[in-house]
Amino acid sequence: MKTANRKRWVDIPLARKVLIAVGSISVLLLLIDSLLYFQVNRIIRRMDTVYSSNVNMTGLSESLDTVQDDLYSYLSVNSSDALEEYYRSEQAYRNLLGSLNLEITSNPAKLLERKIRRMSNTYLALAEDAVTAKRGRNVEKYKTLYDETQNLYGYINSYIEELNSQQFRNNSSSYQTLREALTYLEVSSMVIMTVMMGISIAILFLLTKEMIVPLTNLAETANLVGQGNFSVKMPETDSRDEVGIVTRAFNTMVKSLEEYIIRTKESMEKEQQMMEKELLMENHLKEAQLRYLQSQINPHFLFNSLNAGAQLAMMEDAEKTCVFVEKMADFFRYNVKKGMGDASLSEEIEAVENYVYILNVRFAGDIHYTKNIDKRVLDVRVPSMILQPIVENAVNHGIRNIEREGTIHLEVQKDGGNIVISVKDNGKGMSPERIEEVLSGHAGDGEEQSDSTGIGMNNVISRLELYYDRKNLMEIYSEGEDKGTEVILTIPQTREGDETDVQDHAG
Image 1 (cartoon, rainbow, N blue to C red):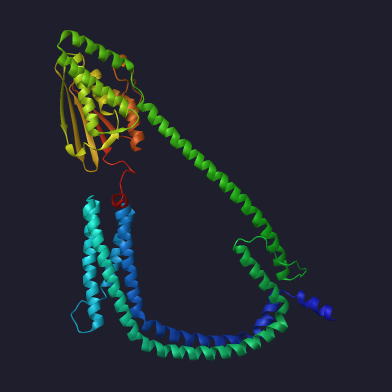
Image 2: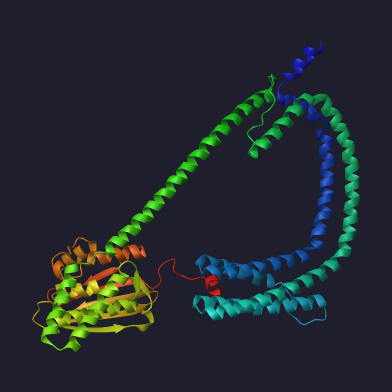
């Protein structure tokens, strides 16, 4: 008979078991719980208001810490995101300062508030000056200003702690009274809940023992699985109620989930390895392309120019020959030295001047060269051998073989965050179709390859795009036949990734 009754209970649906177990005590528990909840929350709300001033001081101190951390972050990395975070935290701190007293009074706490507010205004002004100096790249100034803000930051924090302590002592008396009331309520609640727990346990033990134990085990096992332990399982059961069905399904799910996570982890590891290999290959390919483009120089130009120097030695005195050979040596020394790297604009301009000098010796001074250089950009780094090929193109395809006097004008100017380089000639000019061919990289560079450096316009455009990782850096203008040509390069003054942060200066 007992076995039959037990089987019938095991087979009862879970909803009916819960209704039987909970229905008998739900009304009483709800009433007692509501009463205790109301009393506890009423006292807690009063306790929260007692220490609101301490909470405000803590928030003010945390906000000051955030401002200091964001200031240091911006001075270290010099990014727009860091600057935005600094201004956001600085505004939040100013808002909190607005609640502090600014009037002269005899109240010690109010006097401390006035000190904190005035020192904070000075601190924020110094921080703003440091940000301005950083944006202006005045390293010594922003480091000095940062040290001053660090000192003020320490004084302000000490005053905030002192004010917080004073307020805490003033609030302690009120808090103690409420704490005693809460303690009394806690004891009363414990007694009431103990009685109710005894009644509830007795009822639940009689009505839901076989239901609660499996549910508890299921909850504990699910928690372990949620923490990543897939070796645990629920004990096998032959129960036909909802708990038994869930238990069997749970064990199957845990096994499937463990297998799925293992497969996913292996797949992600393989995918990550493939991505790393692809990225490495892409970087190597890009570097190889850059080195290949920079390595193109025609030896015929060297031989022809040196032959011209030998002829000049026979026709003129040794002094002019010496100057010519020195210019040649400087030009090719620069070419060999910088062929695989970058150079300063001053070095590029000097290479152009040496090249023009060499050609004027070879062609009896037919090239008239002028320049207008902004000295502020002479130290800027650019890809090597980008100006000389443009000047060479202006000579070979522009002013050579024209009846009038041929001129070439080089201009380098700073324009905001960019550098604008112009090479202008008064030669044959270019048609719109030819300009499009050159800019699109479809123009051939081999028409006079035996008498050139071999570095054509396509090479220059490709190396600029690889170096700065952007396109459309070159423009070509010509009004038509025999009206000259102007080639304009607009390049960033600072390449991405070359900015030095505050930590590098400090080191």
